[in-house]
Length: 260
Image (cartoon, rainbow, N blue to C red):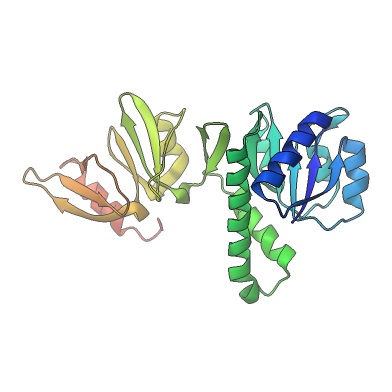
């Protein structure tokens, strides 16, 4: 696996290279780029690269300039001490965003994500009618153009969750949480009202505490009080109810054809 590190601090680059060797011994660091100028020259030569780990703030500018001016098709993992470049990072070929100091576990998760994308690519490439780069660009484009992404924080990682990954948003002890379809839970710095506006018609505000994705519903059943009790396709301990007053609206929402 051919990897390029874009980092203006030599010690930071050496630490990252050592971490990559520990996490992925078969990896090969083929180049250490230290500036925007050097990056423009190197990437302009169209080298064969599998993955890029890039700092953002370099001595002569931001690394984004490299990827705007040169057609770089390899996926990029941005590594920085700041979280204010997140949205800009995912306008490029960014597949992950790691906050410094970089841990082995963060790099391991990123590598796992990269191989997950590679598996998706191999599944569709034979039917896509395009080369590997075209399929990969399509997959990245789907990630980047999803306007319904919610940013969550988990340890030293900043994670953009697409609406299709989110099964349920709920309030617990005055905090707002997101649960994904694989039952992972994340705290989020948004109100449930904000999430309702952001996520759109595929989500229903069951009550003040819960916002549910229709794709997460297994079934609904009436209680004795004529409320609707919701059952989900993933594990969720707390009961979620739709009030009797909202039940008819909820059922019409379930029947709507333009949601899925």
